[in-house]
Length: 370
View (tube, rainbow, N blue to C red):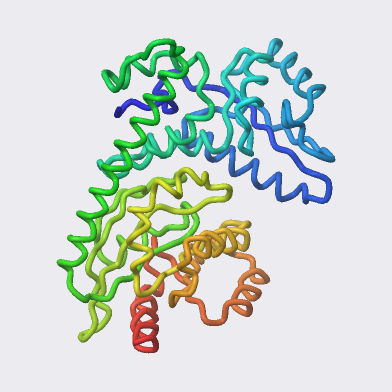
């Protein structure tokens, strides 16, 4: 099923409203940063942001997430100033999605659905497309309603409607069947990957990790001439690219670039991308690339470290690399980072500044941990 339920290639740019919530005790500035990132995600998906709304609440509303009064107010505004969709910064329950769609009569999605849409648009290889579709269907299954009656036509022939079954029950069974097929496909792809990696012998493996758009692909290109397409968009890279890199006359490594991380990364996506993340799990060392020009780089470091911890690979030898240093003019920030990360390297992958230090830093790290 190459066609997916999320990615919609309309010629006309869709307009949207973004909604975030600050719970009592939380920091509004963090929610504001999350909304700005959500706006970047919306832009990457091809949407035009018309308005950003942040509401402060004591607790989340189980029916509308932000409270019915505010929800009705937003619905009234949409009647006066129409938009195509609403995007929430947090994952909504199936009931909340239905309530919002009934209230506004427009499309309502959350951050998870938006990220899945972007992944679907950028998935090129069979592995990436399979992983994204599995993540989409896993996300979709508990949210199936009558609006998905077209499923049986798209899946085509997988199962038939049994006696007494409703169409919705049939759709759910079709999705579960498709999920089973996708898992088998990914298992086969993973076995092929293991075989290919075994053929590489005992070569040392290094993996580039980092927040999305930190410059990992640019760094791989600058170090190895890999020729990976580079875009100033979130999640421009989904497929793993591996190249040989000669560190010195006695040491050669296999350097891999893979998908970037982000806040609130859907767990369906992490689960589905296990085959891609295998390159990182099996690496002998990690190169953690940080976009130093992003004002939220400290938060990005924490997000990446937390995800690596959840994947149980946070104990691997890691070389911290601050990228885009040429874009930072604030001397105070520079000095603070130099002090806090005295063992890190500071480079510009795009302008090829201090790249040789990465090779020597990797060689040193390998020698220490050999």
